[in-house]
Length: 297
Image 1 (cartoon, rainbow, N blue to C red):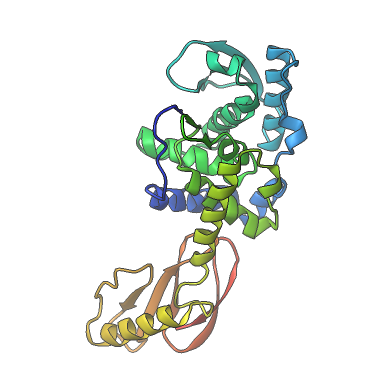
Image 2: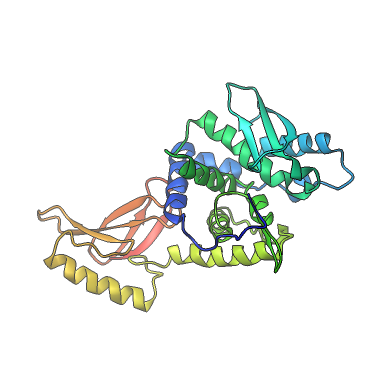
């Protein structure tokens, strides 16, 4: 929780974010992810200043449990002084105890954001999905929260002006925007009307532009002229120097036999690497998310 301290911007965790998206597709499958096609509605997680603190927190927690498809999980929410924004006790269930930082007693609009992250920890615990190391596991949690329709709350909790700043979660604002945009491209959902923070909208716009560029990289036919020119140059070099690194998302491979050259690149939807032969125009289907990709190899 950055509260008054400098907020980090940009995409320093992007590799881990992309790995988290791939891991989520592998664990839930493309069909399973469509159960999360609609995000949690703003009205279901709204918290008025005159709402009872504990009853309101329980109501919001219940809405997020439903969003994350944890029907038999009961969240007991309390408040205490602590360094972090929140914590959850991961046990066998069905009851889970979440503690929120005392500051949320007076910053109630962000209770939903803090609960979303902690309840996703419960979901990942039940799924048996984790990354090694605390940092990467927290990035996984933020990514999954966002991709499953509850993370727009975390981005909306980002506010910054000339004298103060606040951000919840481990992703940067732009990384939250990137994951939100990835989700929006799959489910056709526009989260921008839900933002109450102007800074959140700006971060989403930046992240969306970055996400769109994933679908405009060679060998995809949507790549621009400059990308296609660089790709052609790298392809010529790869024919004479098998295994040479390009320094770009795509890579050329050769099995040393008559099959010839192949190119591998990340699927713009789920980030799993796809391999196709280098033979001009081809249509590829990602084996993980089933996205059909038009390529010019």
